[in-house]
Length: 207
Picture 1 (tube, rainbow, N blue to C red):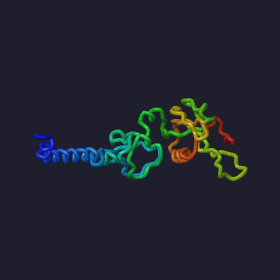
Picture 2 (tube, helix red, strand yellow):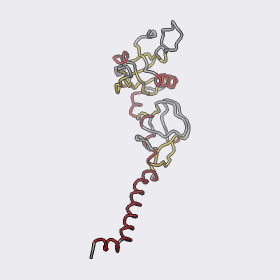
Picture 3 (cartoon, helix red, strand yellow):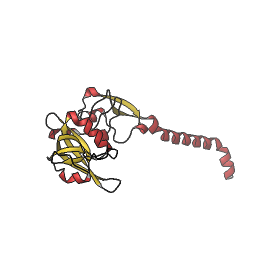
């Protein structure tokens, strides 16, 4: 009996096996898109420095493929502190929040936030140091205006966490600070645009 004859007799079984294999491959590829995971989402907008409570968070089911790495569950997000103002519906992730451990080092009326410090300010950022923070002079500032903008005189350094090279090779650094809650939004807005300048004196640094 020839192999060709055997294959011809088994053609339907072979076709069925190939079809089943194709279906299995399609299902395996599609599974991440159709399976879901639980994620924490904001019920309403919150300000920078807000400590998240159960009432702020709702749990939603999202496609696994659409959920970025670092997304938190409701249990993981509760008691964390927001690094910036967040609108309602924001899916909460590690990059948007700080852990509750930072709050142990923050006195009443202050919140802990993370900012980028300029290279020249990094040596001043020792744990416990009290600094004034300034937004550097903008390139679009009025000619002759060489004074930086004072953001707060009451920043307390909690930790210098991670250095980061700027586009020109300068070494900025991420710094955890405690600041009055009422200036948190302004400080974070400026820090998102450019590294901040720190000073141990209250006179504005000049460019």
